[in-house]
Picture 1 (cartoon, rainbow, N blue to C red):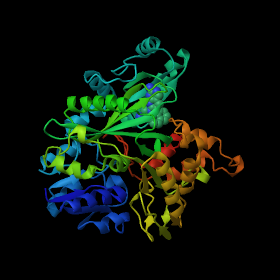
Picture 2: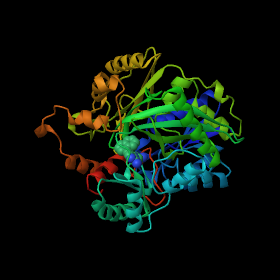
Picture 3: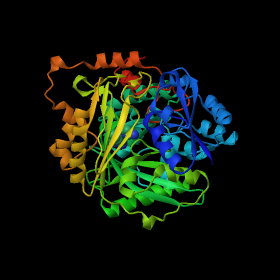
Picture 4: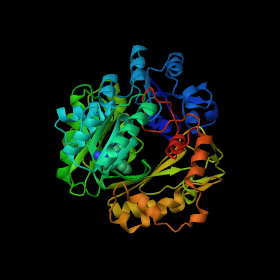
Length: 498
Ligand code: MV4
């Protein structure tokens, strides 16, 4: 491996290139027309145009990307997150073109891509999962029978879904037939597969995930957990490592279960196993993400490891250099996802020109940024600007550092969610780590913004729909799904189609 093509844009493209450069690997950027002047393009050793702004005509064109690999002499492709990162057919096409795909084998992506198949894999690996069906429900009668067996409330989920798409909670039996019908037709429309299954509803869960890393020689490590409960409408807002509620014995049980799942699926490279954790510290497998995730830096801060460097070494065929017993977690890290959006106006997207940018620094602060002063944030993709990470010996120190860093941060010309983080980090429930997946919506519902001043959801949806071209956020989309930006998804959620 000598030259790596980064099939992505923004902060993650820069992040991957940084590790490449430290390892003496040449870097190749690709870009769309609207990204000609983007940060990742200037960071790379070479850069090649893919096509027009919409991701379907640029960052999702696996054929063009492989052409650039050939033309530039790149012998490896790192997909980052989103775009082609979980596309098994693209991973296969790379292998066929004799280019190393820095990620798992296509077979492992497929085995874990369907949520029903992943639940079967969890059973084979003796991994605790949410009670319910492990196969698609064939009829409404079967759905009723499974629900009676596990007891209400239940949740209907699309097998091809993920990240909250195609989910429906059902509290009483009389609602099940209608919910089943809409869930499966919605799944058919959105994912090209109407397969739905049932789970017991876990109330007020935390979302906690385990980072794993596997090599080609049968070794697999777990690198601790990330607490990702602070989210809004299935978009993570703050992540931290470790979780305040995960004690060493629970970490070991979750970690060992995650490793069993990875090994039984023939998994190689970086992956994340997602769990719901209930109030009694029971953990339940949810799904596996077969990519490097947005929030990987918090794991890097507390383990002292470079996950991208590990990915590249593993992809070259090197065995992992560290043993599980050598993985020590030290201190606490918190990440804020900084977006071009306006929390005061119902999180209305706010792209445009960044006229002023002052970035924080100093002790215990890391910033993975994808923009610069003078850059115009395009409408075409997810409007995440930067990830701000604070590290400290304790959670309290990390919180104070983050507040200090947020205070230093200046973003001019566009709206950002910087102020939202000030509010969360000062909130008593957050500071005492009393968070679950409903935490942020509760905090926002209690805010004092007058009804009359609020931009209604349908206006946000309309703006999102107007902006929507074809960007693709981190979460997976099946090949059958039209790729979409976070704003498109927001638009659909509110009942409008782009
Ligand atoms: C659940 C659940 C409660 N019970 N499943 C949402 C995203 C998708 N990956 C799974 N999700 C959930 N599944 C059962 N059986 C609650 C959620 C959920 C959630 C999960 C993780 C992070 C944020 C969430 C917000 C709302 C609901």
